[in-house]
Amino acid sequence: MKSAYEIVMERLNKVAPVVKLTDEQKKQLAELDSLYKAKIAEKELIFREKIQKAENMLDLETAEKIKQELIDERRKLEEELEAKKEKIRQSNSEKK
Image (cartoon, rainbow, N blue to C red; front, side, top):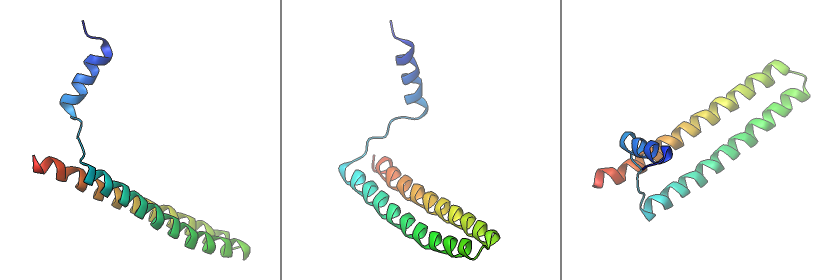
């Protein structure tokens, strides 16, 4: 007799099978993570300086706009990263 957990896992595997990644794909994914982590950190440094300058000048409206730009830029980079990672993951299923 199967446990509820085993039944759910079987159903999940039918809907979204577990994808096995090659060592090369894992390496590529790790490199992408590292690259985008650095890109995001760089953007945050640049934007934080701008925010600080605006706040020092008591221009809170501009500071808020810059904060929103930072959020948007970070989201864009994260979406770009996920798209590239998905492309790498899909390359494994295309080879089969």
